[in-house]
Every structure is written in C-alpha cells, then in structure tokens.
Length: 394
Image 1 (spheres, rainbow, N blue to C red):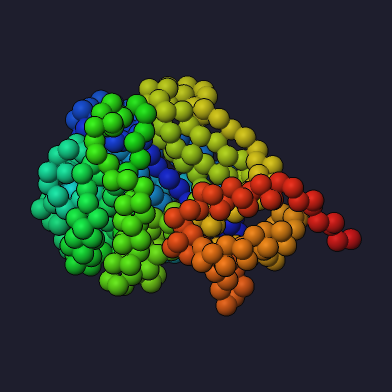
Image 2 (cartoon, rainbow, N blue to C red; image 1 turned 60 degrees about the vertical axis):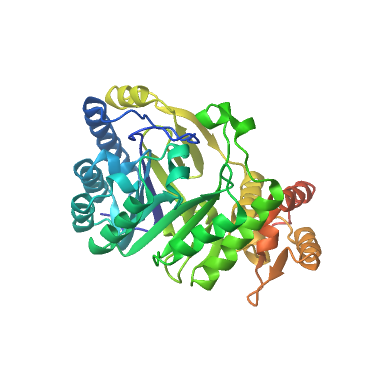
C-alpha cells in the first residue's frame, strides 16, 4: 500500500428508518423494515466502496460516519459489513473516529455491544426533547425513558464519545421549558451535544400545518440559542461550532472536515463528496443508486470543479461557523486574495461584540455573532468579490 499523505473522511448514507418524522427533509425511506431493499442497498454500497477505494491510494481514512435515515434501525450486521469493506479497501489511520447516528428505540444493548466490538467508537443519539408529548407531536419513534436508556447502553457498550442531538424552536416550546431540557440532558453527562433550531422545510408534514404550530418567535429563539451556549458551557461543554458543543477533545472530527475544508467521500443515495478538487453528490434515489452501481452507470446528480474564488468564499462561510475562525496568512497563502478588506470588516464586527481576535491572531465570531452569522458572512462575501488577487511571488 503506498504511503498515505492526506486525511480522508468517509460518509455512508443509510436511507432507512422506522418512520418519517414530521420535520424530516433528509433522504430516507420510512415505513418499517424492507428487508429486500435493505439487502440490495447493502450489496450496492459495499460494491461502490470496493470500486472506489483504489482511487484513493495516497489517503488515510481517519473518520467514518454513518448517517441517515437511521443507521441503528438498519441493524448491526449490515453496518459492520459496510465498515469492514471500508477497512479492507482504504488505508486506515491508527485511531479513526467511527460514528453512527442512532434513534433511542433501536439503540439496544445487543446492537450497540456488537457495534462497539467491531470498531464503532462514537454515537450520535437523536434525543431531540425530554418531553414525551413533544416527541409524539414530532413523530419521533421513542420516549425520553428510551433516550436515557440508549445513552446508558452506549456507555456500557464502550463508546468513547456519546453525543446527543436536541432541537429548539419547537411548537409551543417556551424558553423556560428549553432551559429545563438543557439542564436535564446535561445531567446525563454527554460528551457532545448538538442543538439545532427547527427548520420547517417544504415537502415535510410539518410544513402543511406550519401556520397553526405556534412556533416561538425570532427573539425567543435567539434567547434559546444563547441559553444553550450558557447552560452547556456551565456543564463543561464548550461551543466549537454554531450548533455544536463538546467536552475538550470530544469534538466531532468528521464534521470538522466539512467546516475546515477537509476531503471526504460519500456513499449511498444523497451522499455528498469533496475529493480531488471536485464536489459531487449522489442522486436521492435508492433504486437508481442500486441500478447505477450494479450496471456501472451514472449515480451522480451533480459534479463540479470549484473555482478558487468560490473555495475562498467557502473558507469564510464554513470556518466562521466554528470557533477555529479565519486567519490572514492561511487565507492569503491558500487563495492568493488579500485579507486586509476582510480584516477591516472583522474589526467593525469586533466593535459590535460580534467577533473577536484570538491571541494566535485568528478571527472568530462570538455567540452574539453566531446569532447573525448569515448577515456577517454576506457582508464578507460581498467585500471578497470586489478584491483583486495578490501578485504571485516570482
């Protein structure tokens, strides 16, 4: 095997779940077990991995992430077979982070024990709320008792990093109730927490009755966001990305690839990749994916080479989602664009307490800045588009 020189993440999309939640816009097929479809998907995704791995001889895989859908609903046997194919085909790092997403109802002790013994070491559990009535309204297939049991099962199964997903901005949710949820979940001592504001996407069931759902207003949702940052920080979980909080050393290494410009390959319908200077996405079509792999046909919905200036824009958009932030020498060396106009803007945001400069010279947004990050980034991008490339040194 040639020596690895670059890091690579692997994402596997598992498009199966017990049922579609009211708000879900991800590509997934709800409605219970469809063993035939699952078996054909497993055959296709392992074949796809096997065919693709030789294209990355100089890469070392240090993260593998199984998302969905609900990977835990797919079952341990299938997940292990896919992971085994990744391990056989790619050069693996010594201590890779291997994550699966799980819903509490399918995160049984038996399943998690098998996965833990097979190399999975990180789990992201979709708790969403500690309110059983709210969970029913959202179409979640579990109650909070099952969620606490799933966290305990993950610990006993040996998972080194247990993450919990929560949602705010839910129908009829008050700020006080959200604070109570944060404290209740923090008492379970998760290593990582993701807090997502509910987005009502067209085409979901929630979209159909959105006008009657009584969502918290924008000011309340802003207070909910700030409450999450404060309460989780008090419980040892430091914010490292707009929606993500972790104990030191427990940040999601895989997701950081997306935000910090790392390379990754995606497998399964709807999975995206950023590899070899190109970005490509697999179509949201399970049968088309299975057929395309078996017939060596087209499975992509899009594929493009990203121009340097667009990459520079992504650098601003993605890194300013994180507390890692942006830095002059890094930016100018990578994109040959001047940083000074951006520095001027960041100084303006600093005066408004929306940005800060670290001791190492990196600019990042504050929690207040994260709240209005969209408008901050738009202003930076507009300024960037007007800049002239730096002269190349001879």
